[in-house]
Every structure is written in structure tokens, then in C-alpha cells.
Length: 368
Image (cartoon, rainbow, N blue to C red):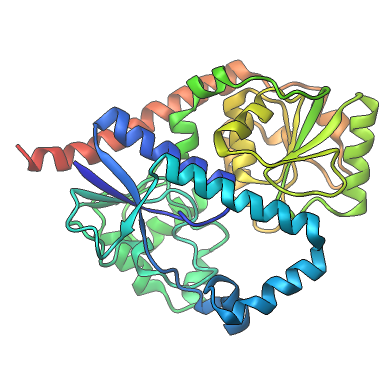
């Protein structure tokens, strides 16, 4: 069988690449299916014409990138250039990305997801909602609306566009409660809650083989470049690290105040988590990587954190959320109960595989 995956294949973010790689591994190994992400053009109409030029690469983009260089400096710019090359190499070596979706021929199935494929903050992209996909067998796996709310769908006049696509899918699964509620209210159908592909696949064999980085004891900071740069945040993390004689490592993102900024491929990144004393993060996949590598974590919630708060609730980890005074000492004074977490990981993996088994079996029965 041949399956295409509609996801954020071109995002230069380790979490996005890890979830794509994980889903491809599951499809290839569990179902003996050929699987790759399909290329498509994203819609950026809701971002405004000026910002749209950042993503629609052309001569108009030059000034945006020159402004980036002037604002953030050569070190951060070079770091992100090397990061982009590293992620592109990883995708190419693992054959994660296939042809453009209109040029791949008819497929046995198309999977929408994972990641924020149902989000509308950039613009309405038809294939994210199953429209015009090259298969009659389309379903979503661990899809998320991300920061998009039901009110956003209505405000942007996308109700029919979103609801029609989701209702036409043969199966709908989502990875968070906000997405579950939106799907149910828009379509009247009850979706299935499943775990993110990174949790589903787990990377257990890869993690077991990853050596400890050659550096002193350290904590990991995993946050987008633009986050965790406030003076209060930096001081709280530095003070905690100093008290516990830890270096500060930022793998995958550039923070000038960290002791080490590390460019590493997505699987190698898991090694930095696995051997860290602890993790400070404000991202969904930073938390996911902490769970699968068995690391104590402290989580900062920012803005609309539906999916991240929901993830922590699912695994009984609400106490890992940092308060406004950055109470790192109190959070890390009570280690995570990984017996409980691992039991819940196993339960949710089994339930998620049940959903995938049903969806793949539907197509398999057509071949009998």
C-alpha cells in the first residue's frame, strides 16, 4: 500500500520533523506501507501581505531576511542556517518527503496530521482538511487546531470549509481536547483522541543507543528562539543551574545566554534530553520528548496553551507547570512518577494503534 501524509513537512523545527519521521516509521514497520509526506503550497492569506513574503520565498523576501540578520546578529542567523540544512539532510536521508500531492498519482490512503494541521492562523489550506487529496481513503491522525478556537473558525468565515472537510473524512482522530471539542461541535461526530506520533513510535531503540553528550552535567532549555529571553526568566534558570552546578544547554534553538547552543539532528536531539538532569520548556514537543526519555520537566505556559496544558493533564503532570515567579526549586523538588507516566503512555499508545489499525484495515479490505 502507498500512503501520503499531509503535515508541516517544511517547518524547520525538530518536533515537527520527529512527528513526521515517527508516523512514517509506524506506517512502514507496522503496516508494510510505503509512506511519505506530500508536498503542497500553504495558504498565508491571514498573515498579511508583508509577512506572507517571509514564507513565499522570492526577491521580496530579501529585506525580511536582512532585517532578521540586523536584528538578531550573525551567530543566531548562522545557527538557524545550519539547523535548516541539518533538518533537510535528515529528511532526505530518511526519505520522508515525496512528490507534490497532485503529481503522486492515486494513493491507497492519505493521512492528515499530525501537528497543527487544522489551525487557521496562517490561512485556509484545502489539503489540511482533506479537500482534493489524491485518494478516496482520507483520515486524520493526531490532528490539532493548535491556537485556533471555534470562535476563530466562525470569525474567519471558515465553518463550511472546515466542517465539510472533516465530516467527509473516513475517520477523525485528534491529539487534544480543544480539537476534539471543535470537531464534535462542527460536525456532530465524535472524534477519537490519540497520542502524538512521537509518543506512538516512542523512539525506544534509538534512545537506548544514544551516547551521553561530552559535556559537564547540564539542564536542557527547549524553547523557540524568541522565547525564554526575558531577564526574569533567564535569571531564574541561571540561578537554578548555578545552585545545582549545572550547565545550560539549548539544543535545536539559539539562546545567547545559554552555555551551549547545539545544532543536532532530530534523533540526536533525544540524546540531549535523555542525559539531561532536567528540562525547562514551553513547547508541546519539548514536553513530549521529556516524557519519552524519562526526564523531569518544568513547563512554562504561554498565551493560548490548549494543547500543552491538555498534554500535561493527560499524564497527571499539572504540577510541572511553572508559576509566574518561576518556582523551579519547588517543581523539581518532587520528581515525576515515571511508573505512572509510562503506564499512561502504554495505554494511550494501545488505544492509538487501535484507531490506526481500523483505518488501515479499511483500505486493506478493499484489496481483498
